[in-house]
Image 1: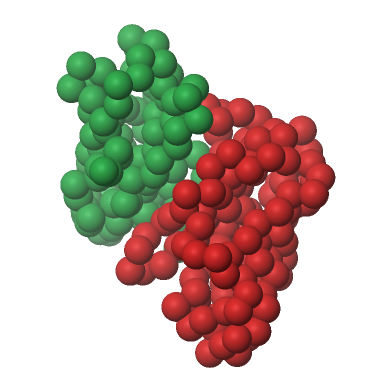
Image 2: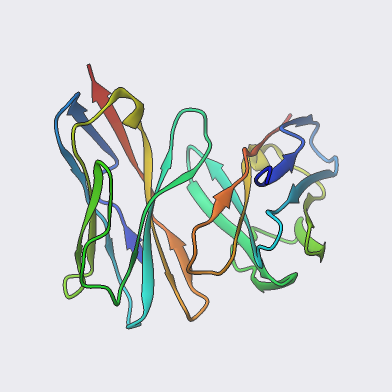
Length: 113
Length: 113
């Protein structure tokens, strides 16, 4: 069964606008971690943002922020003031302290000039 | 640190040949991951190690694939015999812990003719 679901295979956003990428997950664990990774056309995968499940506060990294809804098992990524360099594949990932690790199928983001 | 190092960056081989992909993780990282990425199947976790010990190899497609980590600074992924359907980009990543950020290598693009 798919543990991490990214329901949007493709998304597009106008430059300087805001876009939200969705991610849901399924777990019975109480202690876990969620990630958003970015893979640009260069293929080099890099971390965008990380969230610990025990923290109430949503993680933020400059123009990137998450909306973490623990009860709903939702972990969406918001990109504000989109830039051309944000065009990439974005992967949501989940890990728990119980040696489980899963990636979503990815969302391809296009930024329109 | 130079980051995660993978070699070769590109490999072209003929069906039936043995292929060995190599990875040097970031020094001090206890976890090492091998992934495969294709257009059809997306990003797949093949296997991961903790302190040189394989923890989860459920993603290894079949007996033709094997992975080893003889020491903390080196891992190999071997395909023997290779088949055209093994053509993909293979990524290695390492992290301090399962719940910490994974740092990815640049990938090895494998083409099996």
